[in-house]
Amino acid sequence: MWKIFNIEVYKIFRRPRTYIAFAAITALIVIIQLGLYVDGDSYVDFLMSGLKDSFDFQGKILNGYLVCYILLQLLLVHVPLLIALVAADMISGEANMGTLRLLVTKPVSKTSFMLGKFLAASFYTLLLLIWIAFLALAVSTWLFGTGDLIIQKNVYVVQISQDDVFWRYAGAFAFAFLAMLAVTALGFFLSVFSENSIGPIVATISIIIFFTIMSTMSIPLFQHIQPYLFTSHMVNWKEFFDEKLDVSDNVIKGSIQNVQQLYNSAIVLGIYIVVFVSGAIIIFKRKDILS
Amino acid sequence: MKLLFPFLVFIFSLNTVQAQDAATLVSKLKEKLQKVHDYEAAGVLKTDVAFIKAPAGKIIVYYKSPDKFTLKRQGGISILPKGGMNVNMASMMSFDYLAIDAGEAIVNGVNTRVIKLLPKDETSELILSTLYIDPLKLLLQKVITTTRSNGTYEMLMSYDKYASYGLPDKMVFSFNTKDYKIPKGVTLEFNDADKADMEKMKNKKGKVEISYTSYIINKGVSDALFK
Image: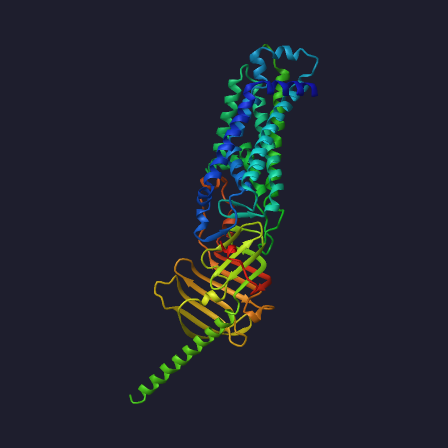
């Protein structure tokens, strides 16, 4: 399996398509950073407009931590589309090129073959997130400096001390990796059914868009099924950026408001990953490889 | 009828005397506070507003006579109610006013004289300021201020080590907060708010608490700090 993993990683990074995601993310992050660097204060004024009527803020609101949060909010919704480009091509791409039949004639079990391919796709997802973390967090803190993080929720504002922020980002990126892994698993699962890449890529993107819309609409019918949609849980990395209060309404440093929500979401995402990957392996094992 | 005129004169003169007393007491307090030309004070700031979760943080407050005041949170952001956070005592009385005696009241277990200050300038931002002054120690225990644009706010002071300068060890600033709700498009938070959270937000009174740990008084403060 390790050998298959290495070969598949090599193949992924030999394809120009792989670098589209890295280029797109770099371009997006750089353009947003540039915009905020040039005219970030106006943007912060707009963000804080609900509060600035009643409160004065003294200190640097627009810092690297806030820029990273803005970037993650904007990007983590779209990254699944970029992951689908690679994950949904893992099996269907081989079938399209006519190399799948050749590959399964090798003395490797189909399970190992599939797991090796899935791990390679997961590695690509991991590298993509590390790249986002580097650009969004490391470069932003270098450009904008550090400071307290102020986040606006629907009905309240959270201020997190700067010495209490970094571990939250580490947790958020780890959680985002789990969420993106669910997307990888979905694309990988769909790639088993097709003999060309376009179908599974478009299907993965369509499912994500469809589920995301259902997850965000406050219609009672949808609200019943929202807890079961993986897209509802993908955005819960934000839970790392909310703090608990003690009985005297003092913020408990280093706390997370809703840890249970994080656990639940991680479990749901884990179940999706296991179901999609197991499903892909079972279907692949039963499938006649004709291409 | 013959007795009514002298009675009215007596009542009027009594009011004038009381008004003079009130003005004298405020002037004495003002004189005491004006002995502090500048200070640098270290303390802890705690913001207690229903819809703001902010950790308590160390602050340094700088004041320079007559009206320069700034509050800096060490490496962080401080959230303060707009307009009203004029934490310096002397500048609370640095306008042309009419002092009216409004009786006595007990604040923090201390007997105080209640004096209402009305600004003479009709276009003034300040509408009314009610001072609760401890006449024995010449300390301002409580202030209720009504302004045109920032509503009414209250300041409650407690004194200890720096009472001789009229500087408080603790100051609690209470104010009314407006509704807070911003569009989901701005927050990018698409989940509906928790009902318990919504209930909690209905508490509309906000508080900012500053506990001072030390003052450096009349040792000079650079103007650059107020830029």
